[in-house]
Length: 274
Image (cartoon, rainbow, N blue to C red; front, side, top):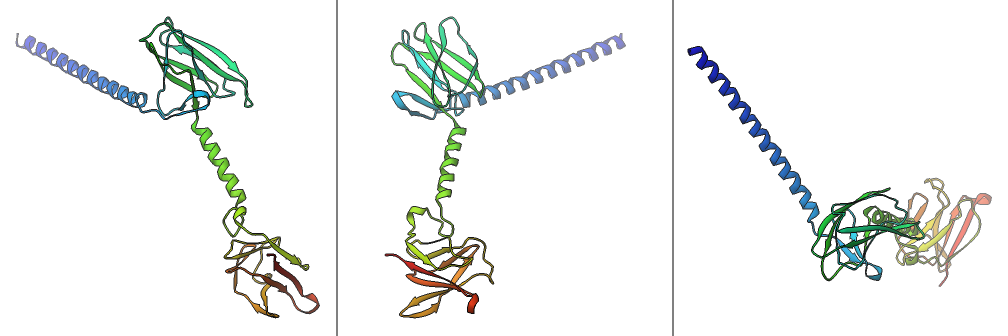
């Protein structure tokens, strides 16, 4: 009898432990589910980044949030995808009361797909997932009795980055070595006479300094000496070399570059025009 009681007590303890573990597992799973839905809700309900485009198009920043497209009965909402983007699937939560049909148009970047959305009545809410050759769209659909978004499109972070990179590249291409400023801010109004193997390729000024650019890197022994010509006299000028660039810390009017001596001497005269 005593052994029977002990066995029953042991079975009861095991059952209690199993129930406790099951409850703990269920609680952990529920916490994970709540955390997951909370994280998803943060993205779904985050304030959208949107702007107005041409012809009244509402433009969302793709991926920033789950955009909401407001439609109305007897009206058509147009959702334009990126040019050249091919649609794989269109999945709608409520396929009975929402109608979605594809349309297409041409553009210089390639064919463009448009999704035409039409609700059966007001007061409806559902979601739509669109998979394409480039990305996946998650879109909320909502219908109201009045007021709707006739045209919706997207701008894409990767396109913005490419545009910024292209602008930076154009700016960098316009930057003249040495001065570090765009060419339109410089004065290239200098003339040169004479021949030398190191004859400068261009001379310019930013109004404060003069920059003399040579065709290749100049070592300390290869660089010509710069003389300023003033009142019939030649004076040696302080300058510094930066790669193939000679930088003079003021604006020069007339100067001469000299290297070598005697019959081996090479000279290039520089004259500022105006």
